[in-house]
Length: 266
Image (cartoon, rainbow, N blue to C red; front, side, top):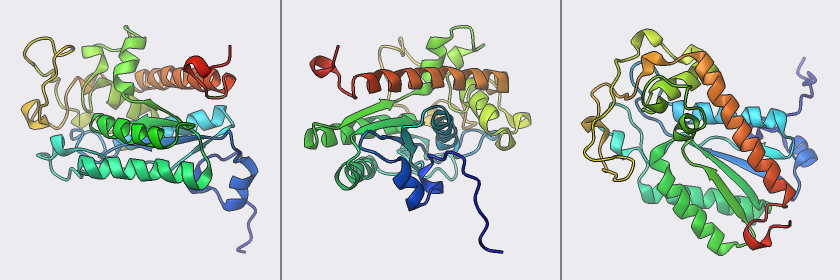
């Protein structure tokens, strides 16, 4: 009874693989996909884990289309102190997050000789920590290439100007984030609880001058943007756009053996 043979689909999700399966696909040119997210309120309609659930599903889609990569387990916590006023937000200190990212990268490089790393980030508060940890590793290991999709939620609105109805889809638990979750995990989204539209008013041109706000200053619902405008169809388009960007990047980097700048081969 206990010796069922598992169907041999091509699995590249590390947490679902055994050592034999890993040894069959891992090589010195393997690309490591890392996901960093958060655990925080996204409004009454969205799950707390949206910031790692959606990037993890995106990474799985990449793995189905590109064989030379391994998707590592997502990091479910991030730097979320600016959301702390909303119940059950779970946050790491910036120094802790930097150390965690550094240690994960160090483990890949030192113990496993991985030199090609692509990070998919799902949470704005993680961006400084990812950069600081990555630059430290790069200083220690110049041969390593570390790349990062820092903020997919701003990229998709720029790539398709006609996709969203409000604020280019921006917002925490807003039109883009809710649409993406409707595409990957509709069972975790309750659109009947989606709050009304909130586009925060900030002094000056907030594209040029940044205010380091706390989230309670922007909304009382845990969400901003226009979640009621979200649809699964928009979510599928988001995933399509992101897949195209990431696959194009990986293919270009593979052609140059993950070298860039003056070292890149013509």
